[in-house]
Image (cartoon, rainbow, N blue to C red; front, side):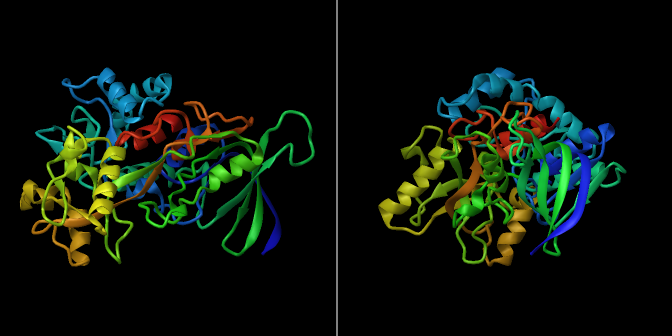
Length: 395
């Protein structure tokens, strides 16, 4: 590896190309030059692989107060209520904007088809079949790709932040950009007036995770080394239903399956979730994940099973076509048999300490999306609040 003499300058340096990074890029492009950096392809993000949807109050039968209450309950009393309200109240407008830029959410009778997931007291999840993240990513990319003010750098890995203190200045610490490793093995120096970390979580530090390979906590580590506070790193949310299979251990079986009527059973076919919570399979994720783990240990089993057959074959093929197709490739037919599942590391509820606008301890440095710790999620994220958080913070 060699250090390149090449130095680049930009107004806004955004590291990460999930929902938060893409929306931030489109928002900032009218105000200056944007450099959007991703260490893999622009499709390698947690957003791209998100199945379930985005939570927002889009029905007259629902309310902001109900969404706030569900978030606080799921967070085990450790959410920051002011942050919860600041994020949740923007759900409707974010969903409407996504529709305006071309996100093809599912509809029924002309209205949004809303599904329900664990911990939610109402149907409030807007989705695009079982590939919502991909639909949102494509819509956001359509706003970013043609813009003359946005330069995209794929296959470029951020190494470290450049700060005034590291350069020997003893006054207030300020972020001045970042060192980036390019595909040729050279380190580029990118100077930026504002640097935004949208690097996602850290699931790849676990053996079993739903996260893509890029989710290795880089942004959090860089910010901490630069002097930022971090918070709640111990609050790792495990998704209850990750496929248990030698060739597909990072494949999720969307929580929307349980929202539509699939249930969990052991190898005898016995439902067990009501032994742990009166909401059964629709309890918050931490409760469901612990219940599966407890049953596995109690029974000496390698996995539990998700039985989607109560939905009926037509509903499975229509609403969960991508999951169904992928399982068929692995020799599993969810229309005919229960599917083996285990909990897997899914989401980092903490991160770089930041407010709802992404401001960190260091001037000129922002953190948005999963890499930020705002207090929204408390100890456990309410399902489908993640895309909402990413987009509100980037807005």
